[in-house]
Length: 442
Image 1 (tube, helix red, strand yellow):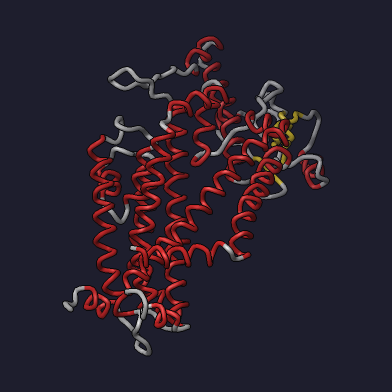
Image 2 (cartoon, rainbow, N blue to C red; image 1 turned 135 degrees about the horizontal axis):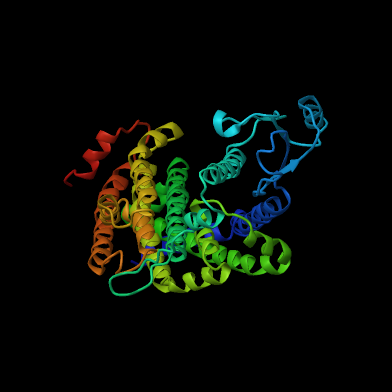
């Protein structure tokens, strides 16, 4: 054990004392801060508003169409199609709608919008919704449906969700659970790739430079492998904690530095997916509802589980990456082909996670959260939806036990491959040969 810790200490200090460690540790949050600031700036200042001229010579729209986000309609009188086209070419409008005198749009069911440039999907949808709402209103009024009846039809019913135990299951909570689960799963996915590859490259460098030959004269290959894994894991954990502190500080500073921009961001429509929490909050009572929903999430449990699955997933996969690194000589293409069986379960896990964040109790999500090769990513997507509401305790405990068992099994297999591969030179190794090393009796 002492020799493992000696190797781990050497690995940790060697990497932490490098200038690249300081640069990547500090620069990454700065880059995230810059990107975050750019997103806020372009969201507030960079909106592509459209103004559309409408020549309604038939009086169909009664002189007005409701303004939509990023799209407004300017009704012009005594305008010909040629004059409207000239205005668009001169940049006065982004497009125009020309309705000839005496035409009945309700009968033809067609309105033509001409623009200078192609209209994007989102703007196209907003324009179609506004115009179709107006057409629907006109159709109902032509059928003698009063405005009050029309408003009554359009009035949405407020559906409240709750569990059978009486706990509230609000849309904002579901949105935040979605965002937290997605963020946690993706973070572990990135960590497995970055630090697993780091372990593999570290093993390859020592093998190619033949430093490994000198080290294994003093320690066993298994001790060398475990020391390297623990040392690099400690580097990753320290780096991760520093990033969390810096990103948390940046998130606190952003509303102070950009108070106006942040206020406008809350008033703007948000995109689905990762911003689903914000969208759900806006559909209810705004940012205060967002804060209330965030308080319903069991953050201490999520953080504790995140650290467990982060370490468990890292130890499981890094031992496999170390085994591949020990079997590779100087050709990096050999590493690419040998890492494919390791990378595939990680990619498979991220696919299941995309399903699990939307359906955390589904059969595929349960399987993915129990299977050791996918559980570090998939279980984090499920835990955010609640324990034991969505994830029963027995599933969480079983998942953790299986992950520990998976780590022991992969480390045993990787150790046997590492012992043979680290001192093997000049031979191209195949997966079949590595399989023989793993189960060879000594």
